[in-house]
Length: 397
Ligand SMILES: *Cc1c(COP(=O)(O)O)cnc(C)c1O
Image (cartoon, rainbow, N blue to C red; front, side, top):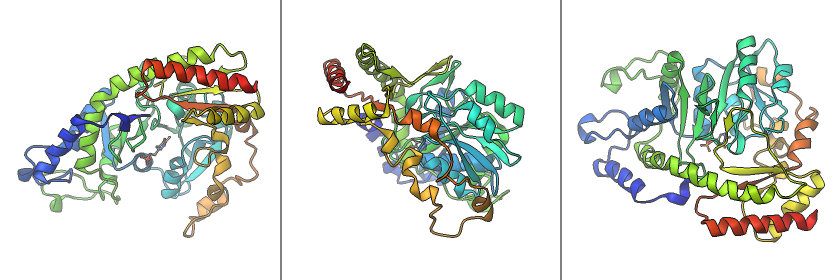
């Protein structure tokens, strides 16, 4: 996920357009802004690129998830099904709205297990939130059938999988809503930023209102606008949007380079009998930002992870004990440690996460290692990395 690897003259030019006028806000100041509307321009370009009808740019990926949930009318006591392997933003956004995160197992796609989703549905369930971790996707077809059957919203978190596709559709455009992050370590970056995609006109309008204090953005006098609903401030600034515009132009090249580098490493690792790879649902194509593979046992995976690190091979992750991405590390969530009193619905409906059986997730995560794929590596470096990885892995087998 290398947006920061390629910050250059194009980004500086876009930001300078904004600095020259000094209009750092995305709305208003029409006569001062020399016709620069970076956020609007980005939204149009991104919606087109992602084959969606509407894009709403916001201040982060976490904001995107929050705005998407709010736009779909999800609030107090509504249950949102999410995976055990994800970024903390999944439950943060759900809890921010007074809704209830319900955690369920993943399968060997490293994303939501559709059977576990179905088993977790109650009369309070409103939304299913697959998270396309590490560049590849959930079984969206199976999840869509479940959502259609039970009248649930399908909200894709595509923050780590921009540019991947499923049945020919860009990830993030398949569900009712899709969310992206452009934080500093994502495939393309705005510094900080995020986006919500949808083909649903009502959700698009609601997202537009919600991310800017409920403003309806009708007319050109901000002070005179009406406010159909209460909102919040999740706006992106023109400076951040300007960076994103330049990065979006580079997305195709990034994806191509990731695919090349991923393929070189995969071809070497697949000569090792004990190594298998995450499964990609039929009809899906990854964005190749990570190469994730399995060892036969947890013990071997831990040894391999140590051997990789001892060999000086950077950017290999063992998520099972990494405190950001897997439930093992979320002690604060498991014990509901919050700064303030939580809504009664959250307290009464949350699972007892310290005593919920996630052995199916454990059986997969404890054997998983992911290598980040950088685009700055040249062919020789990737080849060397692949061979060094193979040596480290085989040394402990
Ligand atoms: C990065 C990320 C987010 C949150 O994005 P921010 O822009 O950092 O708030 C949400 N979900 C996933 C899967 C992510 O990787």
